[in-house]
Length: 88
Image 1 (cartoon, one colour):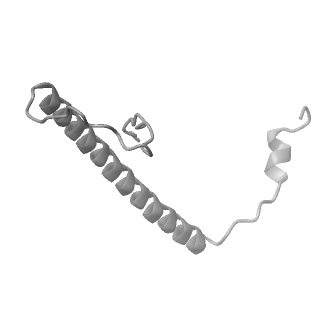
Image 2 (cartoon, rainbow, N blue to C red; image 1 turned 45 degrees about the horizontal axis):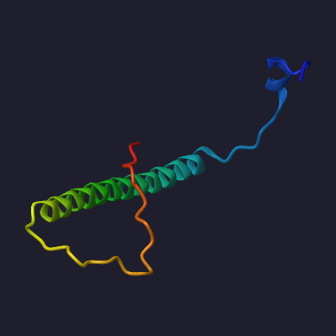
């Protein structure tokens, strides 16, 4: 808006919760954020472990340590998605 300036914005009244309630909300948001961070880190660790195991399995098959002749994927198996670790 052409006529919207800091003076007009300064006169707009916005309802806000009391300081104590704001702090409680912040604590809850931080708690949930920590839980998400923990879950994200765990998922990244699991992805890395699965990639390591996949590499080991491929290596064992290529070097002949395991016999994969005649093996077929189950008919209901969908192609495996490529997963990238989430960094954040």
